[in-house]
Image 1 (cartoon, rainbow, N blue to C red):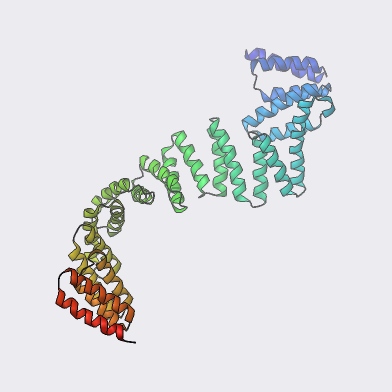
Image 2 (image 1 turned 60 degrees about the horizontal axis):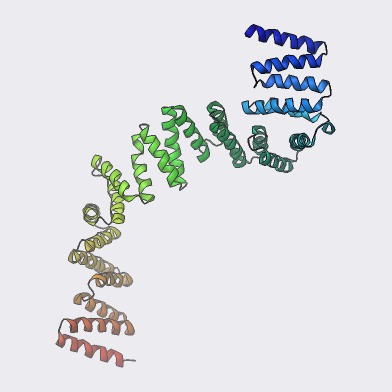
Length: 418
């Protein structure tokens, strides 16, 4: 078979040298019977037809060569073929061929515009061509180069990614990798770049590259707020052996509101580092979201014991105590905070703490009395009267009629004041 092919090639060459174009074409047809996707043979066949001014057949051969070169990613050859097509006479083509001819010549028009320094017009031409032929890599590659010259990095990356996706779908991993490498030179930490590199590593079974890439991708995606993508990336990296990302995984699960899964991960991490306060704090937030109050109480108490002066943390512990029914303990925390706030003359804070206690113990006489006396001290007449009325109602409900009567006298006196 190889000897037959060599003989056919020699005969075709001799016919070309002698200007016997149709005989050369017959030899090219024999070669195509052996390899129907030989772009070079279609290219030579187009040349032979063009020599005989058989422009319709020349056009068909060139277009087939162009498609095959494009499929191979050989854009230099695609450009060469397009220049040959432009030299054909559209008047010798039927309507269907003429329409395609015009599309090809627009490519050269876009090239001319780019060369003459009209990048915006050239880009508009390329975009129209891409819309008409989305799988033609040459348009996208030229457009990417044009964008890159104009420092439009994002737009150039979009075109390279589109080319890579086409290659990926066709299973041409090496060509997709070439696009990914170009993207990595332009934007090495870009989300789309890392995502493509990770997908390629995954499909190639390259565990080392997969681990490194998904490590970076998970952090970039997380930082950009792409939680679903970050979760996928971090789980792939962990599956590849990157145990150092387990904490990030737990955080992503938590922020994705997958609290049950996040708790399992945090529990495992905390078992390995039981004194890690940051882990305890993050696990506490998850347990509060899950309303796992008993577990939350243990962790809040652990942190509060280590940071007794941390007032927000103490308040958090108090709220959890209320949830587990330990209201008296919660009240003690609030009263201690109120005393500290009063010393610092933070009256609004004191009143706020009193209201928190009254929210779960509305008839707490001591707090009702303290609140009324504080308003009285501040000289806030309306607030003082309302506070004493609430105190009086609580006394009445507890059947403490004499104490309620005395408070009534105070209310009457305050009401009579101007």
